[in-house]
Every structure is written in structure tokens, then in C-alpha cells.
Length: 321
Ligand code: DP6
Image (cartoon, rainbow, N blue to C red; front, side, top):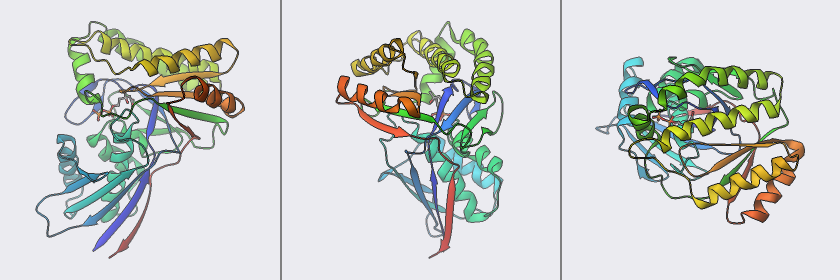
């Protein structure tokens, strides 16, 4: 029986995907620009299970019964009619569903492993298109380095490889590990349907993408950082103005944001972003990493700190058992 083990790192959006043109298959309404986080890893083992009645996925021991997963396997079988029945087990070295982008690495790893059961040489674009059906951000997590996922596109692409900016660092400050109150999928649909600012959010996106891409090309942290902040804060304004409002922030979230603001005022190059959860991700360069981490540890001692460099692409190994 064939078995594949794959590994993927989550994709942290610097410019956010928030809203869908087609909600069934996760065609994004905004272009996102992202980076792979090396320190966080999802490992997925997929085995061929011809005796099972349905495909299965267990994430950290818990069965995934989501519609996203069902759609993923439907799309996988449509694209690969020879795909056998699949039993998958996935583990994360970080909290699942708490706003650390576990669905991005989860579906990227699952898509790569399921594809490799059938075809060891499938290209990353194919895997990215399949991963997207599970979760939009997973289309990006197939690639390493810095990625671009265009509004309306079916797959993401690499913008800059993992070695492009060797001093680039991300510090994740996890301030809560509870499961989030509403999924990013439901929250972005609610924002699109009810926030009066959603059309402004869509309108501003492309200019932020251009600015961030130029900043990445020239490795200009301040230009990138200021643009990243505009993107996540605009995204949250669509959440705050949804009906009913979507509120992921915790008191400690705001404490971390204040510490970042104070560090910036003191001349440290550090800029934060956030996703659909309470965690804060801070971007800086290697020379400021020490001061960023020590300030956070001193001022918000209960935050769980993870440091990361830029990560690589999804990888897999296969054997027969
Ligand atoms: C805030 O990729 O989790 O993290 O496509 O519905 O599965 P679905 O959504 P998901 O949303 C990611 C939203 C975000 C921003 C981002 O990663 O670009």
C-alpha cells in the first residue's frame, strides 16, 4: 500500500486575502502577498485505504468533518480519477485553528501528499490549485519564500524565493490558544455581505499589493511594514463593522500592539500583522530580533513567542507499506 508523508509551513499574509469571488471553491476577491513561516510545520501522512468507505483526515487526533474537506476530496478525484481512498493524519507543531494559519499548511500538505499518491512529479501549480479548494490561503503555502495569489486566480505563484531576504524575520506572539469563535471562512463571508466598508477594502487592495511587492523587491522593511499594517487594519475594519461584528482581539493582543508601537517610536524596525484570531505576528530584520523578543517577553510575559525565518516549499517522501 502506498504511503506519502508531507510537510508544509503556514503562509502568513502580509497583504490579506479576505473575501471570495466564488465561495464554493475559494476564488479570492483580493490579491494576497505572503511569506512561508519556517518554524511552524504541519506534517501529514496519507495512506491508500481501499477498504475504507470514505476519505478521512484526523488533525492532531481529531476528525475533520468540514465541508471544506469534502469539497477538497471531490476536487482531488475530479482532477485525479485514479486517486485511491485516502486515510490522512496530520499534526501541527503549533495550536490548530487559533489564527496561526493552520488551514494553509494543512491543506497544502494534504494536497501535496494526495497528489503524490498518484503522481510524484505533479507541478506546484497543480498542487496549489487543489490546496485552494480546501482553503484559499493553502494555495500559497505550497510555495516557499514570498508568494502572490491574485484576485480571481486559481493558484498562487512564487514572487521571491526563500533566499531573497535572508535577514527577514517573523516573531509570532501567541496570546490565546482557544479555538476561534468564528472561522475565517464564515467571517469573510459575513463581512462581504454586511460591512458597509467591504467595497472600500476591495478597492484599496491592488495599490497595497503594488506597494508591498515593490518593498519586497527592494527589501525595504519600513515601506513593507507600513503597507502591511494598512492591509490588516483595513481587513479588521470590515470585521468590526460586520453585522453582527466579528471580534477576535483579546486584551493581550492590544498589549502586544502597544509594545510594537513603542518599539517603533524608539527607532526599532518592527511592524505587525494579524489574521482571523488574537495572535500578533511581528516582522523585523535579524539585527532587531533580540530587542523585539526581549521587549515582548518582558512586557507580555504570558505570550508564547516563536521566531521564524522564511520557509521553503511543501515537501514529501513516499514509500510502500
Ligand atoms: C485572515 O484561507 O483560512 O488569514 O479560504 O475560507 O479557508 P478559506 O479561508 P482562509 O483565510 C485566510 C484569511 C486570513 C488572511 C490570509 O491568510 O490571506
